[in-house]
Length: 66
Image (cartoon, rainbow, N blue to C red; front, top):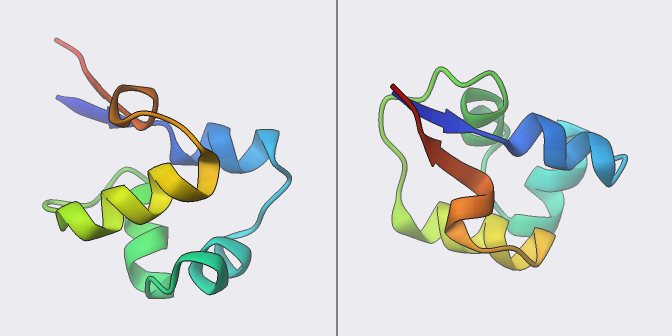
């Protein structure tokens, strides 16, 4: 299972879904799916935009768990 830490990162930066969507240009739907960890697939461009926004590495945003 792949865990997405977007909700935690947004909380640390006191950002809402609308804030992230506006700052990255991603749709609210994409951000919401990642926030709720219900996304089935994600474009690499979306991951890149989130990593740039939060100034993090991919491994900080996504984690492979058992």
